[in-house]
Image (cartoon, rainbow, N blue to C red):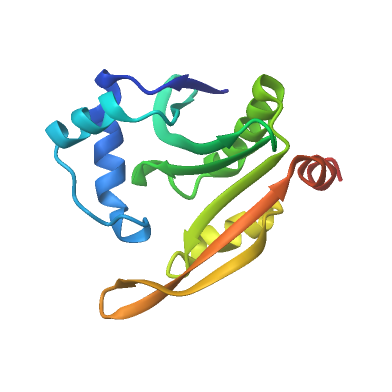
Length: 164
């Protein structure tokens, strides 16, 4: 079973391990220390949730830019490398999207993904997200420019796709 709980200070070493390991696929590819993460955590207002899969922490969800007037939110997730490729992501996203809809009435889910993260792009398309904007040459990874895709999913479409 998949559960979510809010990220706490005690979760930061686990969170940081995942975040720093996959940093080249993130918009900010800086390496962060535990002290920097604690300072960030105490100041940030976005909600982060640990993904608990059958009693084991496997990753986290991040949320930002919650707009109650538009019933929209930005979301994203990262899994620990030892849990990737096991189908946990699809189950987690399905439950998390339903959770946000049920708890906060969110109808529109938005995310951003860099073009060098081909696995994630295909995954989001499978979930039903659609590209609504492409920012060309957004940043550099390695020696190459990568684009930034902004993708959107409407809850009504998500439910329709997953009830087929």
